[in-house]
Image 1 (spheres, helix red, strand yellow):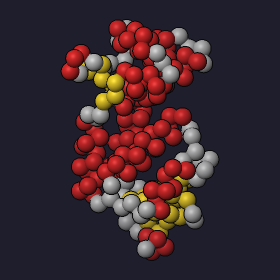
Image 2: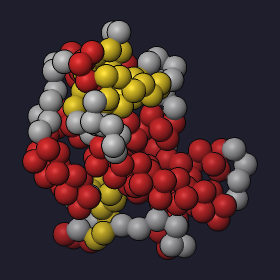
Image 3: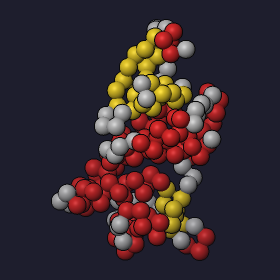
Image 4: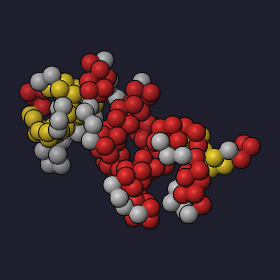
Length: 182
């Protein structure tokens, strides 16, 4: 279940970053993933630590940015790595996403410094989004055939639930009465 939740979170982040269709999420919703609050809080703490690391070759394979460029970007301070045993560079998932963003901005004609700045700005936005999703996540359901993320009730309105309904080309927010869902 933890692995599925991590996959769902990664899908959400990736969708926000590169605006892809979200069909992989539908198969998880059909499996009926439900997360209790205690598990949700534990998962948020695990993800907050961000202890997953990738080797430099993994980052190269995932992004298409050469190891030489990655080392250069690190020397310039645009990305960071942790040195593992044997002095191997290890990168976090967040750094992988930043490298992907930098490459995208470079491909659009931005300078390296501007690409790094824009990617860092996007990274701050994504950290905030990740926190919001974990703070508000109440579960997954299917509404009218679409995956729907239960974001809980609004303050002062316990009789309604906010849902982010993830459709093929967009995500709609709907406020639905609890009685209609239960």
